[in-house]
Image (cartoon, rainbow, N blue to C red; front, top):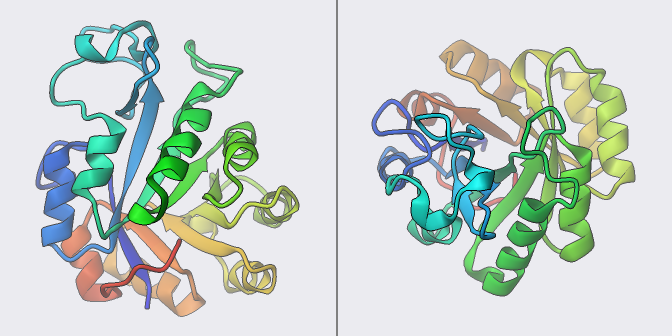
Amino acid sequence: MVLVLGHRGAPLAAPENSIAAFLAARRMGADGVELDVRRTADGALVVHHDATVPGGRRIAALDAGDLPEEIPILEAALDACAGMVVNIEIKNSPAEVDHDPDEGAAVGVAQLLARRGSRDVAIVSAFSLASIDAVKRVSPAVRTGLLTVAALDQAWALDLAHEHGHDALHVQHPAVTAELVDRARALAVSVLAWTVDDADEMRRLAAKGVDTIVTNEVERAVAAVGGRGRRPC
């Protein structure tokens, strides 16, 4: 069985990264959701993809109370997703103007998940190895995944993730091969494919043995490859 995670919830049914989108993904039969997390000036963990809010104000320069009300706090999102898998992507790219070298968002997410204990079925991912390394340092029990783009050498990325003690490789879907999945399985590393909206591609990935797909087309994915589950991804 392949786990189906709604990309930022169910973004075709409700605004992405909103509580409404997460609840819509649940209604559609998703096993879980993928969401993005940033840290505010006062240390709150909030669910939002971009570094800025409408109008251009930077999240890292705002207190949580100054954000638009539709941007949820991470803990509220986790509560709304109770019983579902939640893939928490840390947004802290060195290329962004608000990059935090101290990895405050990653540390905060690790501490939050540790405090909540078994309430959540979660994995923390990032394109930045430093971010997920920070999660593991704070809370080694939290599952972590390294995100990669298709142009990257996936075998190298898999070895890197494994050497650093991470649990999954999150691969841009065109780069997924049966050989990569087999090698990951031999290393006890899960493979997630993102972001997959074509049903034929979903079935190709399932045949190659991926553990999880992330999709905007939640209902299509559930019909093509999905089923209810709580396995880590």
